[in-house]
Image 1 (tube, rainbow, N blue to C red):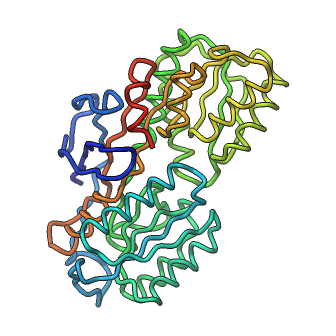
Image 2 (image 1 turned 120 degrees about the vertical axis):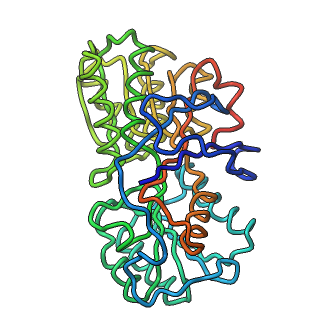
Length: 357
């Protein structure tokens, strides 16, 4: 599989982005790309796989499309109270508008059955190809099967489908290396704490590859570095701010020795900050390391409540539409395309706040 590593130049917080460069193809682990807006970018790799071309796609009867005159559907999975989802949807809309492509959009409001219905509905409304951000890594089979039956190819972004096959049930996937994010999160938290703290982990939602991978990366790196951190508690807060606040309040009350937190996303981290404030804590009393790159979390670094943020880049629009163009144009699409993720630190947070989402 050829892996595309793409960097972005950002103008403003969300809009007016462009693909700046292909940084690496089948890069060697540990290679560094030039530091960009937000800090150092790490070249990521993935396991070898196939490249999906239109001719290989296992969907007899699928028609070749000219995207400029086609109807594309985008299925958003989660409520757009989360800045990640707002930025993700806007990126898809912006790129469609830039390319002059007719776009249908839906939002499943964090309901798997609704996402299945949304996907089927867009196909019935005339969508000829789909970009899907899955709510879960499994469970979308009825929608994917319906799309295959109707000869409508699907490109996936963000969460990876674990029960279906690329170039058979969907074209390919664009997203982050979530295991690498977890490893980088450990390294940053270890540096912030002198690798010696009592740790609470705010886990994301169950049944999602992002949750499993971010935790695996963190724990693998923790073991590899023979860390002195002590894990006091791990509890799911489902990527939600309110749950992050509730869970953190409960954990620090039951375990007052907790003095560092690894949150699987910024919304939970910001909930944790609220809980710490309610408990009378001061900035820096509890070191927090989180993943996403929202304005709220980067502001948290500036204010001293958050020690660092590993970015999870939601701006999939250019890559998703390029994948569709490559699919129909004959170039082919890698099974996995890894987007660049930056890092926000106390050294760059103030200067880079405008570039967070």
